[in-house]
Image (cartoon, rainbow, N blue to C red; front, side, top):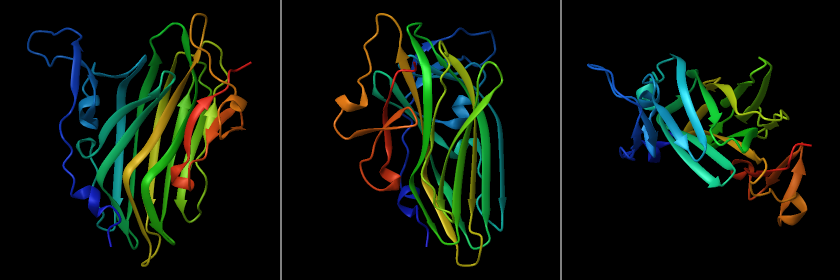
Length: 256
């Protein structure tokens, strides 16, 4: 059984929006600022920028993938990216593919990197979270996705989510770096069947949320006590709206 047969039957429209051009050299491809739903291949075009609010996602690079046991081979043309701005300070990239299925002893792994920049000088990047949505695993199958964030001083932080064997809650990270406006992200994904009876499948690869904290002249972020249902966990405000796959990060506290 394929867990994501429904997503495979969907046709993803070419909804990319070119907001503005970045200039063109004679005989070369014109770089652009993109929004909407685009192929990951579009983001690997040199100079292209994916923009959500004040966040620019650039320099997509270093795509690697491997499949074993007859599993589908994944390329950058098989993954689609949609940006979502949940509120003035919260942004997500949703990665989606219809080819992320493994059964039995099959495996699929993929990784790539990109940069994130806050273009609004009154904001900083405060933290990020990751979660698997539209994903399922039949034991002993498993799915592991990890984001590694590299800060300007070369230190790293990680956030991850694991479904299957073992089954772990998604994690988030608060960077705690005043004035942080740029960082690099490396995303690693592994699906494993692990046995003849194991299965694992993803329709929505994962979601990474980048939070902005206000500087002078910017709207303030409410304290957890001011938001119904909001609890504090490791400096991040989390609202639990259902089971594990429904966990959604909705806000952050100010870094003192």
